[in-house]
Amino acid sequence: MGKDDEDSIAARYESWKQLGCAPIVDCEKHHRGFGFTKWHDNHAPTQATWRQLIRALLAYKGLPDDLELIREYQRDKWGSSTGETCVIELSGLASPSMRTPQDRTAFQSRRIERIRQEAREHRPEFILMYGTGQREEWKKIAGGEFDAHGFRWSDGTVAAIAPHPVTRGLGNDYWVNVGRLLRVRVSSLPQ
Image (cartoon, rainbow, N blue to C red; front, side):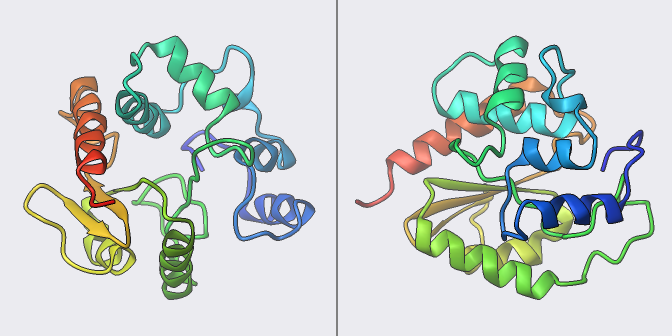
């Protein structure tokens, strides 16, 4: 939930219900379900957090991090049920910022276990978790400690942690480097 969003948790819940209450739903369909189309329109602005995560993904894939490519990826593929990315929040309750009072621990232990279970079952190439304040939760998902660079091999998947994408002082080059480092780590995984 962005700072300027005029939606509510109740509207988000109704959208989720309409999508069948699945553990993971299509990002665009979910947003459209509660009337928020801003991020999925043809000339959508790029969402600040997603922009840097998509930039890292494009770098991982060896693609340029051009803003128009980021916009297209956000609009057409980000968190799509037919795409290659799964976008999961640690807290199931939306909030415009960490400063906004919200019970972020509701359902958290169940969500952590479910994310860990799904990662073990589906074995994604990598999981990028952001927000260093949640390091203990990320360790639970990854199954243990991260190395000095914020990486861990976990059940055939590279798990990585990074600061929040809107952390001041982290430019585009930081996220391109994250993507490239992920590619190096994934390519060095034992087969």
